[in-house]
Length: 166
Image (cartoon, rainbow, N blue to C red; front, top):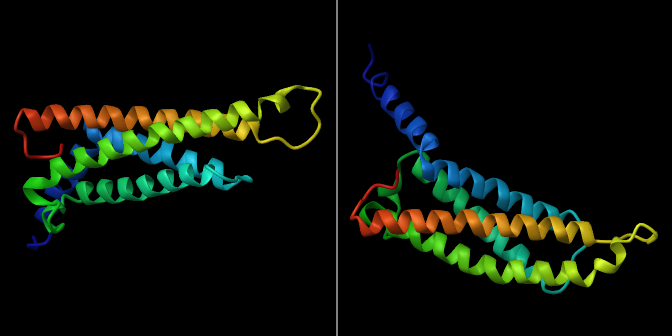
């Protein structure tokens, strides 16, 4: 048996353990809902304050993707300043910032949806972005909820003095 074959089961155990954990499932939902939000907006015509929503969605989607893979591979000790003993706090601050910035994004999407509600009538024959904005508003709400759940979960763990992420 080669020396490289022995760590393989431990790595697989860490990956499966993270994917089955509450935080792993929440991170996957954050990635899915965030992608749903920015793809819905980016695939259609948008203007004005929707740029802010797109910025928030893409920024936190990329940051969450990075957090997910660093945690999945158990390489948080390699992240300068934010890693190691500060990893749980870094995750908590990321989730709080995302939840806070998704709140105005929800407001923008609800305002835009309401602004285009007139074209939701069956007699309206011209192209309308109402359904797109409505779908984006739903995705923004789902994102805010999963980031808030993650922030509460990580906050409780931080208060208990835990050091590990999952």
